[in-house]
Amino acid sequence: MADNNLQCPADITIGCCNDYNNTDLTGHPMMNNPSFANFTYEDELHLNQCNEGYLIRTWTGVIENSSYECEQLITMEYQSTFDGNIQWPSDWEGSCMDEIPFSMPVYDPGFCDLMAYSHSDDTIYIQGSVCMEILRNWKIIDWCKYQPNSGSDLGLWEHTQVLKIVESDPPVFESCSEWEVDAMNDNCTADFEFHKKVTDENCGELSEINWKVQLDFNNDWTLDSTLTLEGGEVNFEIKNLPIGTHSIKWIAYDPCGNASQCMELIQVADAKPPTPFCYLSFPTVLMPLSNMLEVNADMFVKDAIDNCSETTDLIHSWSPDPADSIRVFDCDDIGYQFIPLYTIDETGNNDFCFVFTRVVNHGDCSSTFNIVNGEILDYTGNPMSGIQLGLGNNEFNIHYVDTTAQDGIFSFPYHQTLADPSIYFSETYDPALAYTTLDLVILQRYLLGLNKPNRKDEFLLAADINEDHQINLYDLFELRNIILGIGQGGNGVSGFRIFMKDPLDPEKQLEIKSLKKFETGLELRAVRKGNLSRFF
Ligand SMILES: [Ca+2]
Ligand SMILES: [Ca+2]
Ligand SMILES: [Ca+2]
Ligand SMILES: [Ca+2]
Image (cartoon, rainbow, N blue to C red; front, side):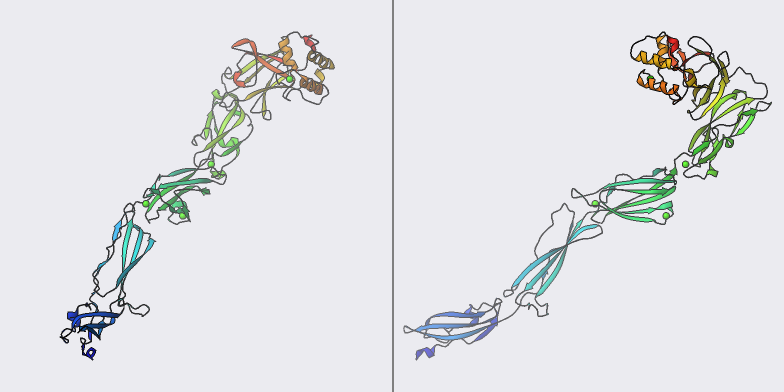
């Protein structure tokens, strides 16, 4: 049979990167079968992705209109030509304003290498001058060489590309200065509200700021407290900060690890004046015959306290100047007076109190100085005797200086200081005995509109028992209480009121309250409250 006569080319083994369709390489049956024509072949492939394996080639040749076949085995053997030469994408550094580049690895694979690449990114934030790092992990596998899970890295190439985003502008402090803080607490400390602000932008957006705040009380290089805070603007209060110099160090970190710092000193000083307790009054200061007397301020201050200084460290003085502790009294100082006494703490804060005293001369001073005198008459012109005149800061601290004589005249020496005492008038007199139920009836009829008083202005003063500038039922009640001996009349000050003519408008009456309005030689008018019958 002729089919036996078709001789196939010999079986052959070639490399995987060779072309098995190249019959110049694999062989052609034409050489061995010269009488055949129309050669064709079909391949049955047993190759993997890497062109590795074998193929069975069935050749067909035609002779005398009959076709004949034979089989040739072609074996493809693995042969790599890839030398592992890979050009990896280069590392990069840029600001957050830049676009992060992307490029692929470049390599030249062999004909029968099956190459594939992949990458995965790890983003990490680092404390340093770099804000962010992207670690791009490249992997290239030659699937014709690499055996997964084999434990061998053959056919596997790895590379880490580093992409750095740099941000190097540190946060900017709004202010950094020194603080002077007043210690106003009773325990000689200050409460202080700390406030600090920084600005920091990353790519046009405000950054998150982390703070470390270090407090060094007494600024002795030994840290006493450390705080961590967050935010562009921070506040916190420290209570009971002792006096002295303290330091505070602010460190602000941006998210890219840049930091700025600010060191501030805090000076805490006593700013609270001491509280002096003066003697309410002091016995007469009697000048010797020389008419000069040195007086130490300490004598007039009973006690004093301060928030910071010990009482024994406080200085008492005649003025805010601590050197002014001794004063010389002479003839110019004669008279009753409220002398201001100053107490000064170690920081120089001061406060004063008044001591009432009388300076008297033993020698020969002219007595025409510093005399306050006048005359008290009632509205009918009769002198008012036995009226006591007192000076004081309030109705609980009144010092009597004179009493009107039979002719209604009073006179006392007075020395003006920066005090503005009130003048008080009183008498040893029982108002309940002075008024009768007739006064009550008159006030009642007046309120009912049934009678009209003479000297109406004076009547209105006399009838305003409670001194509220109105005549009404309350005055009636007050007067009834006085007659019954229940109340004291008016505001409990006295049973009469003292007026002087207004120097600017003689038609007006001014009630005397302050000694400042008091001038020598004034005629005063007294209106006895509740004594109403004489107006009809
Ligand atoms: Ca920054
Ligand atoms: Ca310290
Ligand atoms: Ca003080
Ligand atoms: Ca009244």
